[in-house]
Image 1: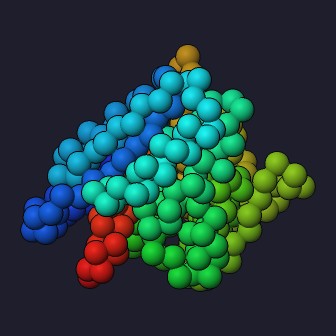
Image 2: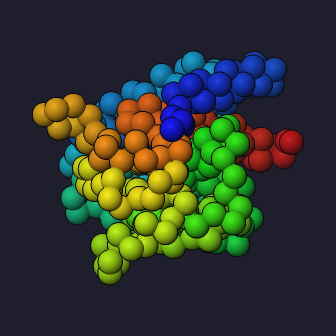
Length: 278
């Protein structure tokens, strides 16, 4: 049983980025649009800004009230699209009720979509030619690479089909020649499917959803969820499951730090691509 330590791996990535950005010697910037005052979003954004500062990326925080309309948020995005000093744009989700998140996210020009969530980049991912992928699934692949986890020929099950994680993760695993089954709330007899899997990634947003009786001995389990319960922080995977795993991601300290590290990687990539650098 080995922990896939996202915290340590993310630190290693940030250190490498810091050195590279210092060598480049140019201003690299990430703009974040935060609408409303959702407590979880406030924490996530603060962590992203802190990580930017750590590696030498300038962060621009655009705060908007919870009463902001969809058109007003789109206009804020368009202003950043046209600002040549901005390399990456991130719209912090969720947005207030009544705002079409997809419509807002797809207002971001794909050259600055460092979150990898526009239809354009999602479409490129389906063909395996994306310049970068959504932060969470891409971070998971980076974590596998750090620990030399072989994916080729493995049976992989992804539970959850969101654009944030499930769908792009399935595509990235397929690129690594895994045989992928994408499961969701309508999947019949999920347990029979996960018991056949060498790799199980869970991103359903339900605490302790995956239990020990749903995985085989030696499985690799990736837990994307984060839930604050009375007993502390847990993920989408019941911790008792980890005793059967060959590798697993802890919560906290697994996927979360990798998501932020990958955001920084994507921002640097966007800067280079916009300026036609290698």
